[in-house]
Structures are given as structure tokens and as C-alpha cells.
Image 1: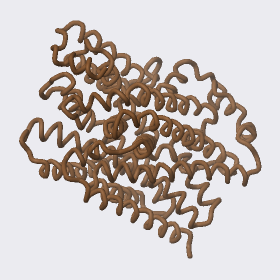
Image 2: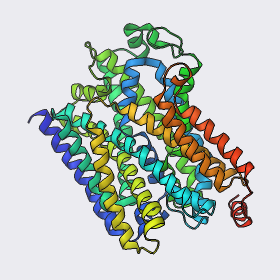
Image 3: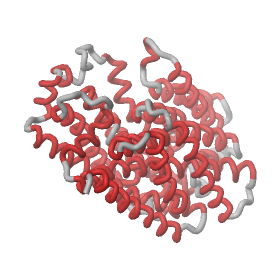
Image 4: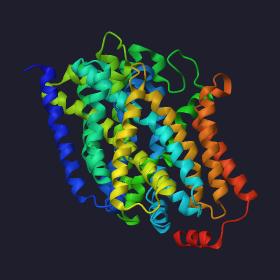
Amino acid sequence: MSTSFSILITFIAYLGGMLWIGVWAYRKTNDLSDYILGGRSLGAWPSALSAGASDMSGWLLLGMPGYAYASGWEASWLAGGLLLGTYLNWLIVAPRLRVYSELADNSLTLPEYFSNRFDDQAAIRVISAFFILLFFLFYTSSGLVAGGKLFETVFGLDYTLAVTLGTIAVVSYTLFGGYLAVSWTDLVQGLLMAAALIIVPIAAFNAVGAGPNELLQAKNPEMLDPWTNTAGEALGWMGIVSLAAWGLGYFGQPHILARFKGIKSRDEVKTARRIAVSWTFLGLMGAFFVGVAGIGYFDTPLADPETVFMDLVQALFHPLVAGILLAAILAAVMSTADSQLLVSSSALTEDFYKALINQNADQATLVKIGRFAVAGIAIIAWALALNPDSTVLGLVSYAWAGFGAAFGPAVILSLFWSRMNRFGCLAGIVVGGITVVVWKQLSGGLFDLYEIVPGFIAATVAIIAVSLATPAPESKITDTFAQVK
């Protein structure tokens, strides 16, 4: 039995299991609330692991190991920022957003939450939905690129065919099962990702017979110093801030915030936070050590550092075991892309179609529109992913910054500042989103700073300044705020 065939059998069995969950969830999906938030019925474990798995995506098994393989301990700034961001998001945002989203007319999507929170009829919803669709096209594409690299590396498929197969796999169960399918498959996929990121580096270090720092010392002593790059040049404040600032992105990611809204009750949040932070720590640490282990294992430098996890698995394990471990990449890709497709679908259904076209649409029509939207968005993301030179980390960094700056300050201030009004919210979303888009096009000097930093600051200033310069919110808005507090 060839290696590729053994892995293929494992992949088919894995996909079969995920599709079974999709069919099960389809039978439990009766209305749009079920499709978008699972009827707010999930406990701590599926909520926490679904948030983690949909957050980390294919970049945890491709982008992060590739970065560690190329840079050594410099990557610890990125990992540290993400771990802190995960903790603060669950601590600060999750409890209040769970309560507020329900009190604000049972808001299902993030744009709907903003609209109901500030009693705005359409402007905030439509503009929020626009930025969600814009940045999720890049984010979803990153997952499809990761899937393409997986099928290309393991089976030797043409890249275009590989991306196409990955897209079909993701769309199939998201289309039918909605939030329940996405969350329960994410639970399985999150556990599989964690197991793979523990097993692979242990096996690799054992095979090499040396520890992480010993391998980095032998490769390039500069890789041992988190304060310098591989050329021995100081990272400086801009380099360190740009890496650590990834943690700011968490507060504005719609697919992660959806998990906070969908959890069964506020009481489940504390347990979910502990699970989510522990999972993130294990995942980031494992991904870093996979990259370092690859430095010692491969004598010839890899043509694409982002394939280090796949190359190690195929070199170290029996084909059947390798198939299970490589399915973790498929799990990472699917667990994020499915969430992004669902949020994008929700934005089109709730925030465009229902808000602007058919306010009286029945539940069956909305669910049908949501499913059509999943397929349509997937096709556009597939087209963007067909460029084989795309890097997973590069695509993710742009989308991550866009969401973090456009929505992060608006979410935090809407939960904690009663004086914030609809004009401030709208200004923050627009200024944050546009700052990221413009900053990304510029380079040199200060413009080399990761675009989430200026975007987040500009959005925060815009919200505060515009809110204070315009009339205070009406009493019914402040009364709901007091009730949540």
C-alpha cells in the first residue's frame, strides 16, 4: 500500500466523519438563530475549542512553524501577543457580549449587535457587513491556500486542483449544518490539532537527538536571541510591537466573537476561558517547536518553510499515522474557513438581504439565502486562492489587522462606555478599516509598522472624539447599558 493511498484513506474517513456531523446538525437547524448561533445552546468545551480552532486556522500548522523555522526565537513575540490577546478577549469581551447581544433584541451577527446597541436602522449594519465581506475574502483565501499546499505536497496534485478539492470539502458541511456543524466539528478538529502539535515536535526532537536551543545554535546563533533577527540586526521597537500587536486583533474577529454570543450562558464563560487559553498555549508552543525541530531534521533547507510540518510528518511516521496527523492541517483549514463562510453568509443574509431588501422574509427563506451566500463567497475566495505564490501568514495578517482595527475598538467601547453613540461607532469602523487598507499600501519608515497598530489607535480616537462631539445616546440606549452592567 503506497504512502499516498494510505493517507488518502485516512483523509476520506476523516471527511466522512465531519460530513456526518454536518448532516446531524442539518436536522437540528430549524431557523436562522439555529443556523447562525446554534440557538445559543453550546457549553464551555465546544465554545472554547471552536473559538480556538476557528481562530488559529491553517496558519498554526503552516504559517507559525514556517516562521519559527526561518526566524527562531523572534517568533516568540508573535506567540506571546496572541496568547495574551486570547486571554484578554475571553476575560473582557466574552461575558458582556454574551449578555448584551441577547438583550439588544437578540442580535445574531456583529453588525446587528452594533445596529441594535445604538438603535441605528441600516448604516452601521451595511458598512460593518461590507468590511466583513472584504476582509473575510482574504482570510478565507488563506485557508484555501493552506488546503492547496496540503494536497499539493502530500499527493503531488496540481495546485489549482488541490485548492478546488479543499474548497469543496469545507463548503459541503458548512452549507447544510450551519453553526452547530461548525462548532461540533471544531471541537473534534481542535483536539486533533493540539494532539498533532504535541506529538510531532516530540518525535522530531527524539529523532534528531538534540534540544531546541542546541539546534538553533548550530544553525545560526542569532536565532537564539529574540531581540534580533537572523542577520543579527536589532528588531527595535517597531519590529517587536508589530509582532506582539497581533494580540490586538482578537477583539474584532467576527468568527471568534460569534462563539461568545453562542455560548449557553455567561456562567460557562469562565470555564471556557481556561480551556481556550490552555489550548492556545499548547498549540502555539507546539507550532514553534515544530519549526525548530525542522531546522535540525532537514539538512537541505526547505524551498517553502510553511511546509515544514507536513514534511516532518511524512518523514517520521507510518503512512496511516501520518494520515491522521496531516488531517490536523485539513482540520485547521476547515475549522476556520467554515466559520468565516458562516459569518460572511450571516452578514449577507441578515445585514444586506433582510435589512435592505426583504425585512419580512420568513425563516426558511433566510436560511436558504444563507446557504446560497456560503457557496457564492466560497467561489470568490477560491478564485483569490489560485495564486500559488500566496503565503498563508501574509493573507492572514492583512485580514486579521482589518478586523482588529475596524471592529475591536468599537466592540470594547460599546461594552464599557455608555457615552458612545451611533456616530462614534460608525466613525470607528470606517476609520479603522480604511486606515488598515491605506497603511498596507505604503512602505518605508513608520509605514513598516504592522497596520493593526495605527488602525486600532485611529479607530479608538475617532470613536471617542465623534461621540463627544455629537449628541449623547437616548435614554433607552443607556438604560439597556445599565441593565447589562
